[in-house]
Amino acid sequence: MYLCPLCQQPLSLHDKHYQCPQRHSFDIAREGYVNLLPVQNKKSKDPGDNKEMMQARRDFLQAGWYAPLAQAVNTIWASLSPTTLLDIGCGEGYYTNQVKQTLPGCDIYGVDISKSAIKFAAKACPAIKFSVASAYQLPFADHSFDGILRIYAPSKPEELQRLIKPAGHLLTVTPGPEHLVEIKHAVYENVRLHDDAIATIPGFTHLSRQSLRYQLPFSQEKDVLALIQMVPLAWKFSPVQKQQFAASTPAISVEFSLDLYQENTPV
Image (cartoon, rainbow, N blue to C red; front, side):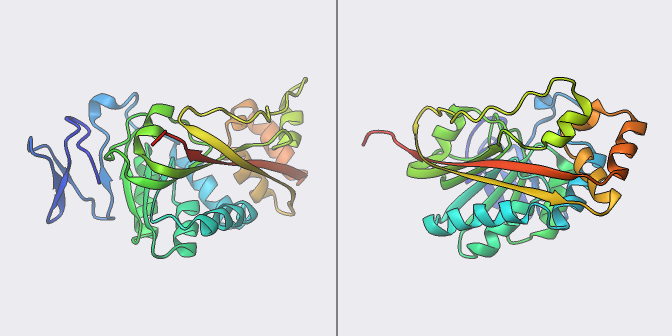
């Protein structure tokens, strides 16, 4: 299933490491994941979300604030029953683990560029195969998956086409127009809503869209701070502004667009 990130040849498992025919070797970490991001492919010393963002997201998700989104994702995959699934940009594995609980027989892989996030994910979810890698050069063999999940994560259409099996499904989650609009009003004079256009993805046919919108009725300042810290809008706040906004414990709108696609290469 895995490809060597250096020479793109298949990797074979030997005891506690993967090795390709060219003898490039990649050890399985103590937590159970494999790092397939070569040093020369890194754009920084520690790519991906920093530890502060990761901890905030972990606290926020584990508190259940995005549980309705996880349930919506699970319901879609349950109706499709994939046998092999890849979660691109899986972070700490919150949604990956939710899907695994819904589809215990599915062979699930999670990939993220953040080593810290993957380390936590692998330790928390040993039944899932996690790896550190770039979403723009995914270390998997062609046509490996009949299901691909992409929640907010960027990726190359060519990689999606390469990895998906014939007639396989791609599920994307993107922010809807009103997503976090109250936070935007706190930092922008002129608020621009998210575009709700359905993305065209070469090699795929769009099948359906499900919109999910609800409010987060915060009562504790720490939950508001966790939400702010885990999103890019955090950089727009000064420390004082952030604290003042969190102290007001506002109800915040979240809106998601779940778009289902199917691979459409002619037979």
